[in-house]
Length: 312
Image (cartoon, rainbow, N blue to C red):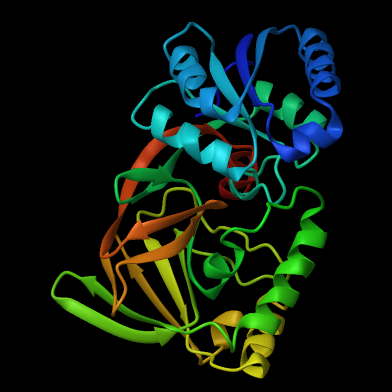
């Protein structure tokens, strides 16, 4: 649905976000106040530390703002998903992270100034969420060598292109040295067994188009997609990465694809594994369960303007 322009907004900024720090928190706040004043909006802006984000979100959720805007990286945005799931008040995303996956998913401009303007007038839609062992996430779960590789490393904040290049280099350098996972994926009575070095669980599905960052097909398709790599060498992974960038990765015979709404994941001979969920790195006990929570979140989504135009 497309609401009237929002007149009262509450904005919560994670001031420990690396990107916000690099721009300058006061610069961002001043810019936001100027933009929203120009658009005739009343705005409350709160800069809080990471540990205080959840409490600030809960208070804002129960307040009288037309919408609550969360600014920070994907981990910060994911924390808002749990707070706003099942609520009527819409959540907006101000892209102040590195990859900004959730912002990309909803079609938000990646320039924070343009995003601020879009947040006033963009339509609202419902978004599926992923429940991972009781916590909610918006975008993607990564298993395998990459989460293992970055455990204990300082987090990089900066250009997503630079981080993508670092990720690619680390992947090619390390894929053959980190032991593979022996995954058992159980959906109902069916079990799939895979020996893999990396697997992705994407909320809904991805488009077959050119680009480094995948483009999500839908916000509310009602399923998640599991992509399991069977590549065992650097050359095989390199070919797969090239196919990914060219938008032809679904033709790769070394990638197994399945769709699910409820999946139990077991890993042979391991009690805990590193998992990256919407950019947030955790070590979690196995087995664990991933469930789709359909249309759980009302989110401000500029991409719905294009969808309405196509359907019209």
